[in-house]
Image (tube, rainbow, N blue to C red; front, side, top):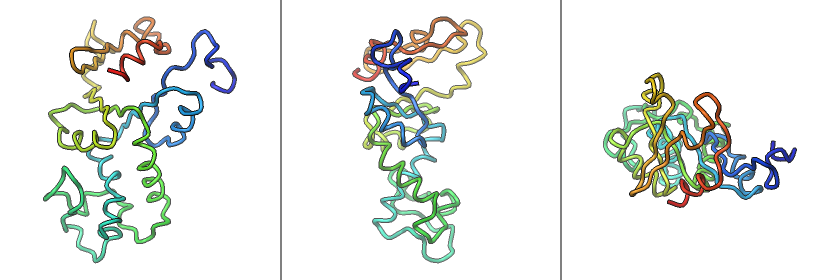
Length: 197
């Protein structure tokens, strides 16, 4: 898309922002290369992602790799989850003793790239994940809780409408669409409004 010139800066519809899944670490380089902002839309829950983001802290504190087989042991180094997160609550690959495990390496790479995004979008709402979203904002200050997404669909005239609000300004997802069934590229002013507000 970008290399073909179809959506380059001189095209009629240039790319003005990249929204990518958080596991697509290569999106950082692409956004940087074409000079547009990057937003990661993580489909995993904020709590689930936070367990990934705590891995470097666990390594630094000597809590990972785990010693012993007690999966009910409390994980001490997991801000926002103090006192109740157990080893068994972490993803299964945390039980490996091998730092070269592909899953561990993937998580460490995601840890390096996620803070380079201009924003993180989650399918959650503030009341559900407030403590974790607060911790995440220390890594990436622009956090957008737009969920639960399923409530935005199948509701007659409001179908497909998502509204992001911050301060006294807001962004309505319909501003980035041609019509109900025809998604299009977000214009530059709308992208700036979201990212710079």
